[in-house]
Each structure stands twice: as structure tokens, then as C-alpha cells.
Length: 361
Ligand SMILES: [Zn+2]
Image (cartoon, rainbow, N blue to C red; front, side, top):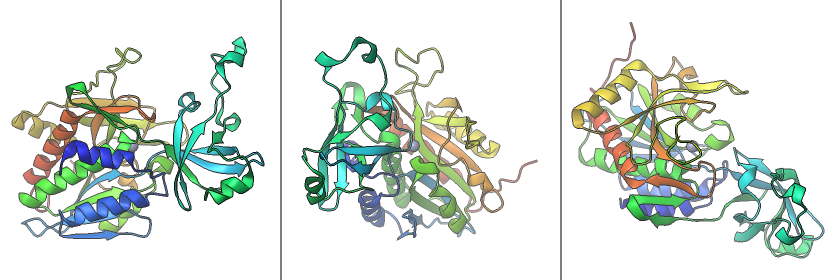
């Protein structure tokens, strides 16, 4: 698995929540070559099994989400402009002037999110964020009939246009690093584990609909009834001028061990990781000399947030890849952190017995 080219390929695919087909196809094909068996469930979760050497009663579930946030067309105007709603946590601050891709019936369609020409913008509008209800997409059509002829209709998914670039210092930029970086890590870890097998069985799961409302991971965990879950996703780097000093997660600082996440507004989702998993990862990182960072994240949640509510409560932990500018088209990560995540998760899984005991007390 060539890491930067894999990231480019994954990041550039358009796969809005619930419309993950392009990433499902890629992950299914790549995992088929690296694991013992691959299935895709009804929701779209790609589930690959690596058999361990120990004859486990239950596998470890290693998972990352495939979907990305974006928009959905909700109205075609008679003049050919498109109105839309948000799918997932799209920041409206970045929308106007943005290039987007629509997944039309006959293939991808280029679009731009319009913005009032600067020269004629009144002073009082210049520093105002325009709500998505007042924004529109221009695909070059001059009528509703032309829009339809381009294969675009109400319900057409929209994502940011690809923006992948290799930057100096081993960094890369692209859309949907959240969480195609996690998907790339799944492939790298699967490759490592299939060569040097752990004792425990490992189910490598690429999930759907995380950005919608954490919908894919729970039924996958129900099906697998795993001994434990390790979730791979991005974590918010705080090493930029606007966030420095609020937390100490840095790009290039190494994999991130989650200690707490909580999304109090509405979902009440979050994760307080299982202590054996959290401490096990950190002890192993210390022993192997893998630099890691700790994360306490107040105000958000992730794909692991409801695993403790599945069956008898799946012991879970988050491993993060530091990422700048989350949920924008210019998400930036360090390749070294992705390698660190791969190393840490792979070695941890190899350190486990076939049937680890996670009983507390
Ligand atoms: Zn994510």
C-alpha cells in the first residue's frame, strides 16, 4: 500500500454520507487482496476478516468511516441555479466561492457556489456569513430543463471538489482527510497484520454514514459482537495561529489516544474509553518508542460514540490522526502521523491474546 497515492485516490473520491459507493468499491477491492474474506452489509459497511493464529471467540473490530460531509440539492430553480441543504457539519463560512462536484445520474458534474461580486457588495455584507439557505450552486445551466439534461435533480449529492496536494515537510492536503486518512490507515494496518498475524482475529471495518449521525458503526458492531473496538478518525490539530494555546495536539506529534469526547448539544454522544484499552495503547507506545498525544475533546463526537450501547457494551477506544481545518476542503495532515497510527494500532493488536479479558474491577 503506497501511502500518499492511496491518500490521494481516497481523498479525491466523492462519497457523501449514504452515497459511499465509490469508496465502498475501492475499499472492498483493496481489502480483498489483503484479508481472508470481505463482505459488504446492507447499509454499505465493508467488513474484512483477518484470521488470527489463536482461534478467537470474538474478533477485535478496527474501524474508520468512509463517508464525507457535503450538500444535497433540494430545489432546481427555473433559471438553472440549484438550492441545497447541508449533510453533516459543513461550515457555512467556507461555502461561497467554493468549487463542488455533483454526483449526477450520468456522472460527475462541476459546480461553483455563487457569491455576490465583490465590487457591488455593500459594506455591511462584507463581513457577514451567508446562511446556506441563501446560497446557490451554478453548474452552467440556464434552465431547469438543462439541469435535468445534465443528470442533476432534487436529491443529487454534492461534495467539495478534489484539492489533494503534497506539501513540504511530509504533509498532505485534501478534502475528506476526515476520514479517508482513517481508511488509508485501515489498508496499511490490514497489510501489516496479514503478513505478520496477531493471535486475535481482526475485523477491519470501513463504515458508512458517520457524518450523517453515526449510523454505520453500530449495526456493524452488532453483527460482529467484537471483543473490543478501535476507532480511527482525525483529531483536531491545535497548532495553527487561531487555535494555539487551547490544546496541544500538533501535526507531526504522533497518533492521538482519546481520553474523552462529548457532544452535549443534542446527541449526548461521546466516548470515555475503556481503561484497559486506553492504558494498553499508551503502555505499548512507551515500550515501542512511539510518540503519542492525548486528546480531551469537548463539543464533538465520533464513530465510536455509541459502541458502548451495543449488546453488552463493546470496550472501545479512539486513535486519532491530527488534522488541521477539519470539515473544510483543505484538511491537512502529516503522513508521519498516519504511519504512527498504523504502527501503534498494528502493534497493539499483535500484543493481544486470542481472547483478551476486558472485565473491570
Ligand atoms: Zn470523521
